[in-house]
Length: 79
Image (cartoon, rainbow, N blue to C red; front, side, top):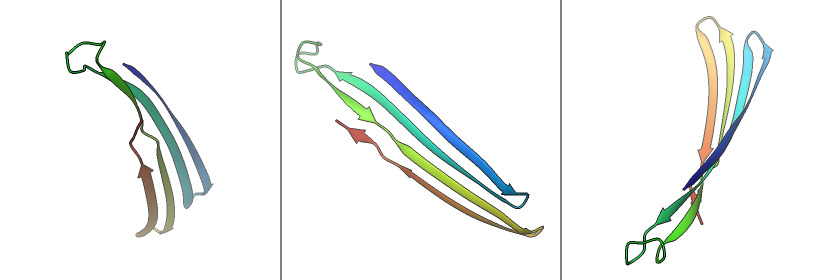
């Protein structure tokens, strides 16, 4: 079994009223399974990837009105 991953995030403030951030994450891990005779000789393994992305945009229009847009995407891939 192995497990590797990383996360990168960027923040930017255009002004006191407007800011954004973006984040990318990736994780790869392996899983070993026992085979028909419940041992490692008849077993197999698979690699699983889990990439993801997130974005946020916030705009303060007034002290009582805030506009916020968020988007996120993630996948789970088995090979």
